[in-house]
Image 1 (cartoon, one colour):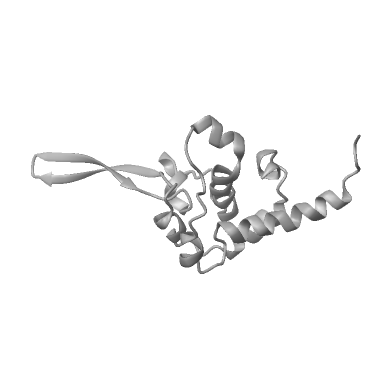
Image 2 (tube, one colour; image 1 turned 45 degrees about the vertical axis):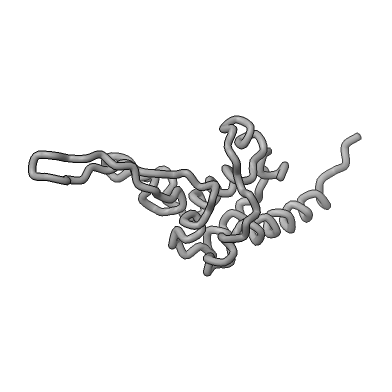
Amino acid sequence: MRYISKGKVLEKTCAEVGNRCLECGGRTDVCHACTCFTVSDRQVAPDEIERVRVWDSCALDGFTRMAGGFNPRRAVHDRRNRRFFRKLAHYFIQRELSMACVGCGRCVQVCHGDIGMPSVVEMIRRATTELEKNEPVSH
């Protein structure tokens, strides 16, 4: 999706995706390609603490929260943009050398806001088709 790779997705499209999201994290829980995690400490004995890595979701509000409570991705559409950018932008996939969306459709089955990957791709395509109609043709 060249419009995602070039950062030309319309703000209103991003806002529409964000407004439809219920922030349940279900899509990332079932996604083969999601690898986000958090690290926490838990007490396993009176004198022993274990550091564990726990699967997390970049789609959830607390994922990017920093010390002191600052959250650079507070708005839901900022978090959605990050997720779809990471899954659809060609140069990100090349840089990270990891798979992105594999097209399995699990996100479609669990997303109550109907913003699984196919729906979002369709929303972006519709919006960018309108953009292309209005762009001057360059030769």
